[in-house]
Image (tube, rainbow, N blue to C red; front, top):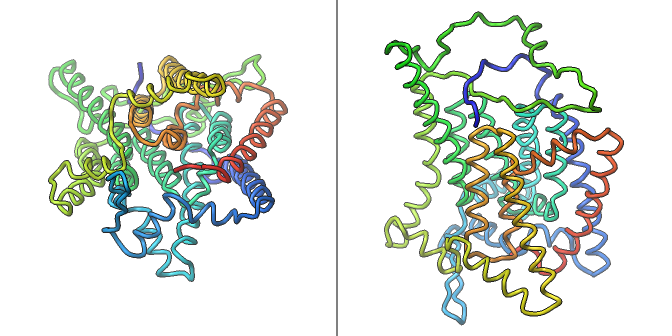
Length: 433
């Protein structure tokens, strides 16, 4: 279904210059969202900046940054909301920036998220460009920017930071930079519980690479090449020949996109093993530390999450929530929308499988979708919990890239306006818990 072995990519334009259209488009979409939010909030007598930096999870993160762990709220129903539920990397960065710059913790959180969102957009582009080419990469970044809850990317939340680390870890795996992939996966594991998805992607790619090494050794009579190198030992191509090989073939379509054929360059076995060993350290370290602090052992973090009524029930609570929407006519439309939304996500994921997305992307996306849809967490949070699953957008990005430039710009601009209006409405209402 996927391939994990290829020669290194041919030299291309400098990375930042190549990503510039995607980053400029992303910045424009996010600026539009902030302008609309500012206008909407002013009309309601509210502060847009406060909505972005000092509500819900933002307050929990800044409290950790300022006072450390140990704060909890006991609710009348007996639930205990502990700040141990929030992973430490974002508050660590807030504290670090606060120490070196004249910024409050809230200001530092907003700054980190702003920079992380740009890094995430670049990472989304880098992965998609590697798999499908530059044009699809630009479209994928714009689609990620115009998600209905894209305003969260500008909030002092951890979604942008996590997506940046996850995207670049996936890119490192796909380009054979195993140690970097492991370090980034460990940092993602210090950012959100869904860091397990990045760990799973690194491990899946690593296991497949070792299995193929073993298979090559058997086929070659036990004389495997060191580090999983190609057995045919072909001479490296000249840069001009490599560029010609990678250039899109002429086609009658307005903007054709190449089929994905991404494979991971060979790397010494010790590098792959080290990357795999590093990947789970972030999640494991924090979970074990919470267990030690609470005195409840390795499962202590699950008890902390249970105090927030978060858990993994296979999707039962979410299915029940959607079914309850059909008890009255006005809410039935919302229930139908939920079912259609989940169906669309699953269809896009299956389409990615059929389009032969690289194995690390499929594993990562599958785990993110499973953890978001099958957890008994706040149902209003699920759209933002799904935001890091950017590879699910690649089939849509390919379709958008096939349109003529004028049409794709028109479609993207229309969706961007709708997303900005919805984000302003959503954040001035109940917003993301």
